[in-house]
Length: 433
Ligand code: HEM
Figure 1 (cartoon, rainbow, N blue to C red):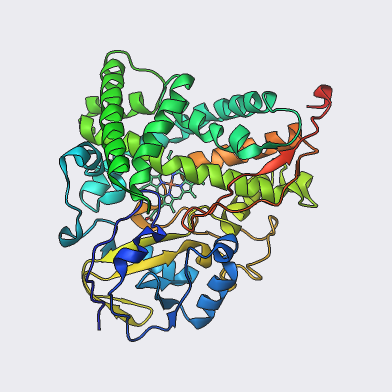
Figure 2 (cartoon, rainbow, N blue to C red):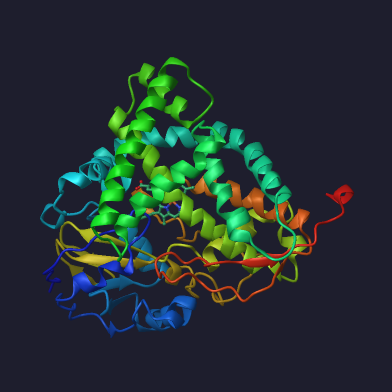
């Protein structure tokens, strides 16, 4: 028997938040699934959700999480199957789309062309074009930029204890993406402010002021990018926008609206996840006994993958079922929704023996921190590049880096990252760097 949905839910650009909990009450549990209960707002759970995930995996590949009123895939195999299944997707079924009021029109106009809100064939076309901007040449161009940004941020580290998220992990991805689009560094703060106002729409505290701010931000962001795009058409540069615009001469291209939505999505979806991936990795590596070894050039790729597997920044995404599907022997019907617990999948002992152990030297296998299937993260190669460059530079220049306060994860289950990460550094002798 399928699930019966009686209410609507909202979905986050970056992930699927706990915000939908109150709105989801009233769904009927799937009769074939074990039921589990855990308030995702419980502070102890937020600090360490992994024992709960272990319990879920022991119950089976699919469970019914009562607080979400939703089936959840728990294992690597089940999560992967759901994410890759052609009978499911992210696009909200028509009867569950939100009503658009005039102040929010600019916001939803941007969302209408967002890769994360679309399914084939529109998704395939836009994504194929956007992917051209993430080719090898673009990444090769960005590598020295990431090094320069990392060094400049470290040069500005204060003396005494400080929050390394604010001083390093947060500005770094913002500056990288700003340069990736060929924009001046001093735009990074403004882009971030627009992005924050838009992303606030997906959080529980959403109210008319937040909606107003999101509408204004979307309109200003759109107007700013329209101007930049028109300038780049006249005077191309060496950047993502110019790369995508150059495709127009080959008869493939995005409309201005599609390009604007894509750029806004890249900023909104990419920033926070990279900040938290960097922060989680710094905390993990700060007291690692083999830090020197695991940050070496031949090993850093494996280390970054292990950091992402062990403590991914995004823990849950969902899929709508569009037609009857069979997952792990359980039947779901059109309109059902299945959550994918990425961070549970990544601790699955069947794939990673002793999965709760952090081991950068372990054999590498495909984890799901970047998702899978047609919506797999388009910015994964850029995010990996940032981590592979920024972490070794940080620890090489600050070999005495120590976490000085027990870090607390921020109070949001869906974004698994620290509130603050207070460290102290004893800079190396300049001649040794
Ligand atoms: C370590 C950092 C990052 C992590 C862990 C991450 C994770 C993810 C995940 C799990 C998805 C799939 C969502 C789903 O299946 O429903 C996704 C999609 C996406 N990510 Fe990332 N991401 C990161 C960085 C970035 C960056 C740097 C960018 C852009 C510059 C970016 C842009 C996107 C976009 C545009 C999508 C949607 C792709 C589509 O729908 O086709 N991400 N990301």
